[in-house]
Amino acid sequence: MKAVTEAVVRADGGKYEDVAPRVWVFPTEIPDGQWGSRGVIRPLPDIQAFIAGEHERSVGVERLARRRRVKALELLEGALNAARTSLGGSSE
Image (cartoon, rainbow, N blue to C red; front, top):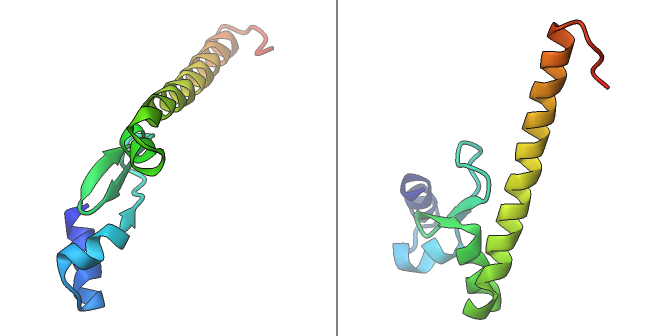
């Protein structure tokens, strides 16, 4: 995060503290629900709290948990279908 932010600061020609707040990094290798800003990784609950206020942090926590449950269920369903197929059964 920091290296990307510093590269944008250099390209902009401004000061780190002035440019960094405008830089958001969305790398694909960071686990789901985490993004970067100001040179560091920011989890979804932190972003929710920043945007809507600390009292709304739980919304980000719940949203991230819901997304992770859906992804886990998709993974389990795929594994079950693969197991059924390898045993000669139906994938339905």
